[in-house]
Image (cartoon, rainbow, N blue to C red; front, top):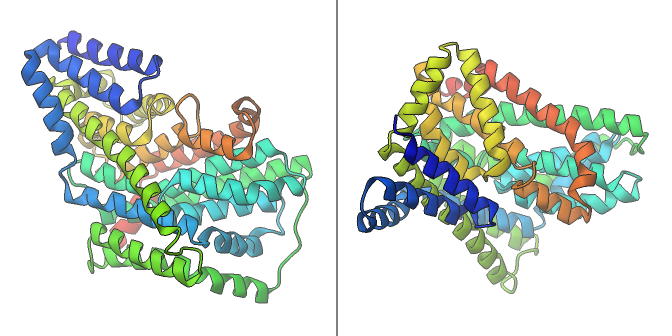
Length: 431
């Protein structure tokens, strides 16, 4: 193994991040510097720029801008208020009721919008002040919001699952979508248990029990929003349309719904489109840059060398999965989810498939693992959104975050070592 390209890649990438270079540019520049070790200047520049372009030349990636736009339309279209109202009637009377409402609403909103940051922003701005009014600490409210927002990246439809499908070389998007349900709901359930214990310990106020009539009314109000999940996932699983077609249908459905609710109008539509375009541009730049680095890694045979190195340590599946999980938890602290999935899938997937692990199962492990990174400094994007919306500081939020982190890590442990949690639903549909 030639260690020079590996050292150039790692050192240049870490140095660029340390001086504050945006992640996409850090990835591209470090990939270029690694290529310069092996080939002349002009071919190196040409190869990296071509790989950024061709990395985006994929029909399945077209689903991402559509799902981003449908998420923005849902965020602005009064969906969050209806989901919160429904969640309130379900769990508002339990210990830590408002915290549980936050988790359930975030799971529903995240799944529908497909964005952890959109969920953290919506739930934090709506529920945050209400939790404070009821005596909850600002920091606890922010911690619950931050961790629960990530569940929407596992519960479909999820842009990150589409990215993993691309990085894995064609894992079924429909199978990945189905595989995410049980792990996502399980993670949310563990977060609710921890939040409830914390609230009981702190003696936070409990809401009044709602009647069946009130539950039914809020369910009917939220039903059009919840139907989107059935429309999108049902259509993909039954083969009526592809994931890309489903994303376009999601945009049309959310636009019509937002206009019926009179929350999305012709006047505010341009801003929604601009916000969606801005998010899409960032995501696509990260994807293009990450694809160039993935190609460079392959060119330098780095995945094969790492695979051989890991398998030389042990051929025990349990040990290798512990090592990979620890490495991914470390990576998640410093790198955003999209580039991490694109760069590390080609490295770790050959290792786990040699040990007999299903690529669908590994995709859920990887994404659940990296969700924890979104809540951790210094690059935790959801952490910064949640703290910003709550108008508090990271230092103050860390204490209530720790037990919620442990809940997420416990969920990761179960998903890692009990594959049927991920594979049972896809197997029901022969996917």
